[in-house]
Length: 217
Image (cartoon, rainbow, N blue to C red; front, side, top):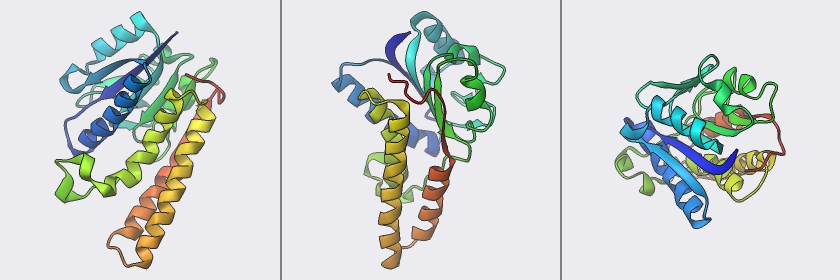
């Protein structure tokens, strides 16, 4: 196992474009910290390339972004990277954070079964709102950051040396703080605030951690 961060960044619709941008912030911080990393982005994200790299380099920390379901994590344009019956053994003893829907239901528990790995993800849909007027410039979208900065905190905390449990809790604490901000917005009759609050709660309630809680990158 090597101290390498591997990221997957599909970028083919509005949702994955935002996840791709926010993942780039993690990569920027990893570079600042001198952490070896490998980024599979856009058309460079293929099942074959990712699997070959994991087998060869054995990265300890894997950050998967994109669509998913209870039993699988997707790569680019619905290609299945990992599932409960495909490539999951390659994640043994690793730290995986999956910013994808529902993977905490079946995939996460199976990934950590009988090994010392850790999975952080969601047993509900991972959701966020965007400002439609900013959809081409995610960096300027203040609505989206309410949801995506807390999810980024999982990875920021891990690459700074905190264990999985601490990193998971830091992320959830940031969600709570953003829920408080949104409640203040609701008091000022901010359009959409109640909807934002519901989604933040959904992400908070659905964010789960399985496996070795004290594992560090």
